[in-house]
Amino acid sequence: MAKLLAALLLMMVAIGPACAVAPTSRADTVAALDRYRTDFAKIRGYGSLSTADRNYVLFSDAMRRVLTEHVKAYDPQVLIDKAEDGLKKKKAENPKASDRMLTEAALDSMLGSLDPYSSFLDAERYRYLREQTQGEFGGLGIEVTMDEESGLIKVVSPIDGSPAARAGLRSGDLIARIDDVAVKGLNLHDAVARMRGPVGSSVALSIRRPPATEANTRVSLTRAIVKIQPVRYRLEGNVAYVRIATFNQSTSSSLDAAIEAMRRQAKGRLTGAVIDLRNNPGGLLEQAVQVADRFLETVDIVSVRGRDPEESRNYRGTPGDLLAGLPVVVLINSGSASASEIVAGALQDHHRALLFGSRSYGKGSVQTISSLSVDTGIRLTTARYYRPSGALVDCFGVSPNLEVKPTHGSTEETHPDPATCDANAPVPPKPQVWLAQDMCPDVMDKAPKPDDDRPLECAVSAIRNRLTGTLAGGE
Image (cartoon, rainbow, N blue to C red; front, top):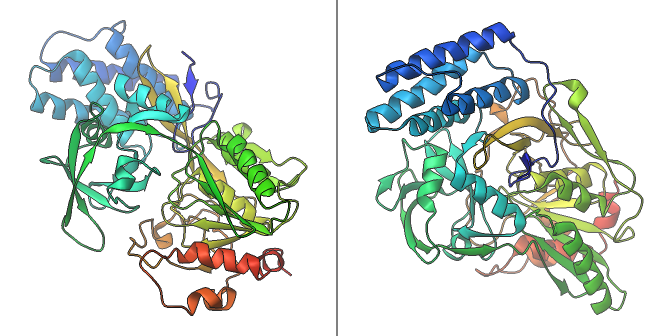
């Protein structure tokens, strides 16, 4: 098994052990781990914990990686505090909990306290993440995170064609109950585990859809094998429409094939393209770079910066434009996250495309997956990524050039308020904006129908009216 694996939510591929300088001395780390061994034995209620114990080795390995690899520096004693919170809670819930159960509870608590995306991966979850990047897995087909304000599980995005998408779940929905179990009080790992189960079995979710303050929808979903088709496409007249649902190992090659197929269908008369990244939760960094590069020349696409400046990396494009300069519109919304934001931000910063829709999610951090044992792993936030303009995407998201909302109901503002973002972070530049009424009056003037897709219709209209190429180029 490879030591490091790439997984959903913008995972780095083929990154070796971090070389960042530890924020604390070796003596401080040893002292904290000695305290953990002593307190583990007390909470367990008998004996002592040897440094050779395999569960201790598992925990100490994970903590050392946090101290050297996480994007933020941490006091090891604070990490032990969080680990002991998990130990005590597990012991109270199950007085007969095994050493392995206690250790995993400590890891869950410690890693879950770092940020919304770092976590311990037990055998089931480790296997699940590997399957996600390979394009097929069993489950509900939903990307989730913990909502710190409510203590509930928040939907980042359902995967196209998945049970979650068919049930009508939307970006921003809050999961309040899983079957008859309240989510509040569960950690993310436990909540996700409850949503998994044998293919063909059912699970009921109680959904709170903001701005509602109570769960107001209950849906029943049947677990299934989720086959991720990263790219779907069709022609809208002579405008190429490409829906990118995720960034997995085949996304960029599927994009190439889609554009070539539509070029043939249009008999070489394509007038532009709409790239739909709405509700795309992200995926592999390398694939996001390759997709952006399809429309850019030798320019910066994204820079990835960890705690150690020497470990930063800048990704640049290569010569060639898949569309040879034809106008491009990118559709985004609050469910567009991570790798989607790399593509949208790069194309906007280089004036290669206009962005239509609403502000993206604001998930601009990089998670690295590495093994702790044969069947377990750790997911750590090891870096943040920055747009070519130098702006941070994390929390801020990417703002559209033209704000246009779908006619059907949708959750609004499911991402962080920019006022709550890091005050010291580089703020994204405000993009030049246009009104939908000016860009696509033929679409905005007609009476909306429930099934209309106004963002897409507006994008196609703008390309047909030859507005987008000139405006995206800043002329």
